[in-house]
Structures are given as C-alpha cells and as structure tokens.
Length: 212
Length: 299
Ligand code: SF4
Image 1 (cartoon, each protein chain N blue to C red):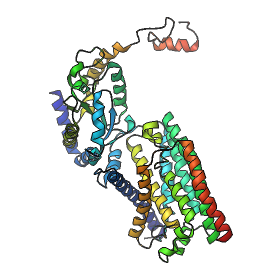
Image 2 (image 1 turned 90 degrees about the vertical axis):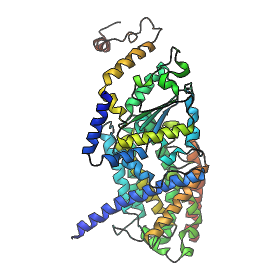
Image 3 (image 1 turned 30 degrees about the vertical axis):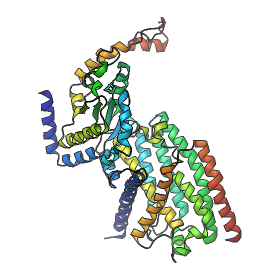
Image 4 (image 1 turned 180 degrees about the vertical axis):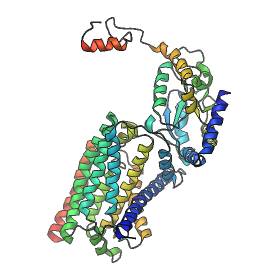
C-alpha cells in the first residue's frame, strides 16, 4: 500500500516534469553496473558480457567504483560481513540507483537458508528493484531481467532508492539488528576503542586527560 | 552583427562541435572494438546517451578545488580545439603548434589538480602515472615538431597543411616517415589506449583519475576525453595526413587515425608503467631523434 503511494507520487512528479519520459529513456539505455561478486552467481556474468550474449548492446557496461555506477548487482548469497560492505557501496552510489538480486539466495536464502553467517532476505536491508530466480540464473534470464528493469525505469516504477530514503528507519533497524552480530569477539583488554567510547571520552583521550 | 558576436558564435560552435565529433568517435570506437571481439556492440550514438544520462544524475563534490580543476581541464582542452585547423579553416586565424602543445598540458594539469583534490589514493596514483607517461610521449613528439620547424621556419599548422595539399604524394607521412612512426606511438599513449592505458587501468586502480567522479563530473570527464580525441586526431591529420579541404574528408581522416589506435588497443595487453616509459623513450624517442637529425642534415 505504502509502496503504491510512492509509485503514484513518483508518476505525478514525472508528469509535471515535461522531460521525465525523455530522461527515463537515457537512464534505461545507459545502465552502468557495479557487480558485487559475493556468491557463485558471478560466474554467469562473463558469458552475459562477452560475445555470446553481449550485454553492451543494451548500453550496459561494467564500472570500477560505486560513484560511477547506476546498477548494483548482488550475485548470490551475502554473508553478514559482506552485507556491511554492500550497504556502504549502495549508499555511495548516486541517484537514481537500482539493485538487482541474482539467484534464490538474495530472495529467500536459497540453499543457505539455515546458515548462521548468511542473510536470507536482501530486500530487508536495501531496496531490491528486480530479483532473478534460479540457482544460478542463466544468461538468458539475466538479459531478460535487465530488459524488464529497463521497462520499469521507463515507466517510472524502479524507485527503490526513493523507498530507501523514505523508509530509512525501517531499513536501518534491520541492518543494525544483523550487523550487531559482526562485532569483534576478542577484544584486547586495554584498547580504548574496543568498547565504542562516546564522543566525550574520545575528546578527553585526545587532550590526554584520560588514561583508559 | 558585429565582429565580436560573430566570433563568439563561432567559438561556441567549435566547442560543441569538437565535443560532438569526439563523442561520435568514441561511440564508433566502441562499435569497432565490439566487432573485433565478434560482438554486436552498442549503437554508434551510445556515448551521447551516456553523457546525457550522467548529467541527469546527482553528483558529489569534495571541495572547491575539485570543481575548479575539472572546469579548468575542460576549458584548457576546448581552448586547444580553437587552434586546430579544421578542413583548412582556423577560427582564430593563427594555429601555432607551440600554442597547441602548451594549452594541451593545461588540460591535463587541471585534471590532475581536480581529481587529486578528491583525496582518493587511487586518483593520485592514476594522475602520477599520467604525468609520468606524459614525460614519455611529449619528448618524442616535440622532437618531430622541431624537425618540421627546421624545414618550414614556421610553427603554423595551416602552413603545414597547405604545403601538403598537392595530393597524396605531398603528405608529410612520406617526407617524415620516421617522425610519423614516432608520433603514432606517442599518440597511442596520449589517448591512453593499450599498451599505455596505465592511467585508467580499471581492474588495477579502479579507473584512476575517474575514481571519485560521479554524475555530472563523470559526464564532464567523458566530454574531456571527447575533446581530447578531437584535438589529438586533428593535430595528427594536419601534421602528417595533408589536412583536408572539406569537412567530411577531415572527419574520415581523423577517424582513420583513431581507428589505427583502436586496432592496436584491441590486441595489446598493458605494459607496466616503467616498461611503458622505457618503450616510449627507446622506440618513439629514437625514431623522433633520427628524424630530427636527418632533417637537420639533409632535410
Ligand atoms: S542462488 Fe545458488 S548459485 Fe546463487 S549464490 Fe545461492 S547457491 Fe549459489
């Protein structure tokens, strides 16, 4: 329900902007990806990019850093530690940005559903615009998903980044709930940073007034 | 309309024209590379789409120096484009090759200033590689230019172009063959194509100078490369390939130069940076030096 409202609001906004449709055309025809090769899924990307399926036809290409990319590919399962890096990368990307989850692992955990270091539902942590089912999806399925995503961009439906902004509290709560599990287990007994000191404590430490 | 307004319109026309030509070349270049790799490749207007998309994104700046440096780079390169004769036509009336060489480095220095200000270590490594490589290719290039200065006693690109206008036989490519080889090798390094693509090296230093550029900054980065292609291919066409009497001949010749570069790029791997500079000095440098000595004694 909430999501529908956001979509309608976005449509209304685009209607008012006479260039909206045109801008969407350029956005869909030039998607640069940052692939986060976490799981087994990355192996299906080389055939998608090279001569056989040639994704550059659609104007897509790999980019080196999150700053330059429009599209974040999560290719497979995500461990809790990787999740932290994925969130950092996602937040560094510039809007508009889209996320595609590859395979069943980001959807529901796949065969890792009961593994303790792996998260099960990616869309609880960052907004996913498109999920590709399969273990692992073949290049045809990947190209098909990208074409669907292009359609959604043209229609103004791919607004995951706006959802993230609006419901940031909810995402943040979920992120904190699992990222709390990654705190270091072994702490040196006199390391002042081990117990997350407060700002006051840090300032005192800097002035040399504290001997923690 | 007074003369200044007319000049202003011409200057704006050349600025946008050089960007458009460069972007067209980049798009055709991607198509050519794709065909070499037996792919379909993107449509030839893909670079235009990319740049427009970049300008519709949000972007991050790190400080004022970054904004200034990037604009300075674009300004420097566009200023260079004013001095490149296009089809025997030079808007400023003069087109000294010395000025071209001088202004071209302003572009690079602006880029260096802008991206170093972003504070990312990868950008700094990329820039230091670019400046090291610049030392490698500018020296052979200047030696060949000096050979031409000795012959003509003039540094005007238009003079060179007019001197070559009596058919293919009068092109400088026959008069300065060693110099042409030296400049071709140097050109490969100037546009940063393999084996001299140390500066970008996406898998190694995360695209070097471009690492922190997002949205509109990246768009300007693409425009920079486009103008750079226009300037450098234009320079080589005027120096060696006889200039041109009409705009389409000029475009075809410019693309031919870029096409050679792309074909070499498609089949070469990257040198290490010290190998690259050594290669440039030994090969491009000795060809340039031989040309200079030959022209000085017998030319
Ligand atoms: S969906 Fe299958 S192929 Fe993909 S990461 Fe999970 S287990 Fe591996």
